[in-house]
Image (tube, rainbow over all chains, first blue to last red; front, side):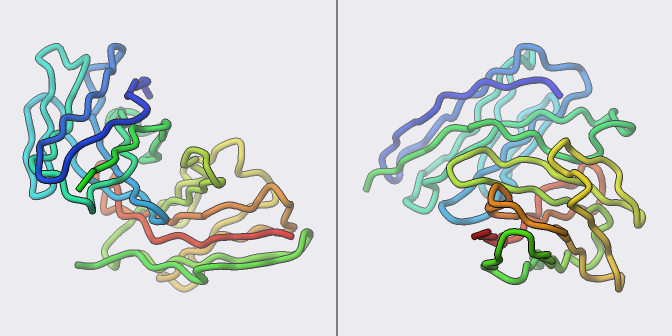
Length: 115
Length: 113
């Protein structure tokens, strides 16, 4: 699976929007972009995923660049509960013979939210 | 909302002992995974399991590790002879399909002394 690059850490103020960037310049045409987060002392939690178009769900929005070499996870109003490590992960949906569903986690971005 | 559960939440064992970590997947899920996270480090893939057999395993998943789904519900990870370096959080994850990922359990903290 292609590699992603994320800032080590970011800070945000409560109730303000947060834009978490991810670079994936070597993304292939069949790579899905997944975002997970890990709250302190918890397991990873799925946030959102997309392929080409921007995606919205109740947790966040995912903005994907037109060339797909980068994406941004948007938390519209950060809360203290959003303080976590956010992981941007690519997964090749066509690679059924290889990594069948396993996720390759990087170091992610540690998001701090200030009250 | 359905969730993956894991037992025990914390297991302390002596080096060389066998441990079995248990996971109850979400009921209609068909794909099962184990991951581990050593304190302060990245989450690492161990093994994936589908249709009652291992689909893929990482280099970490050596002969000391095994997985099974003995009764069609629980999904277990066994470590035959634990080592100090096996101390970590072990997460079970399940999914309905290859693309439907992402339901992780709360983890079992394994401490090997």
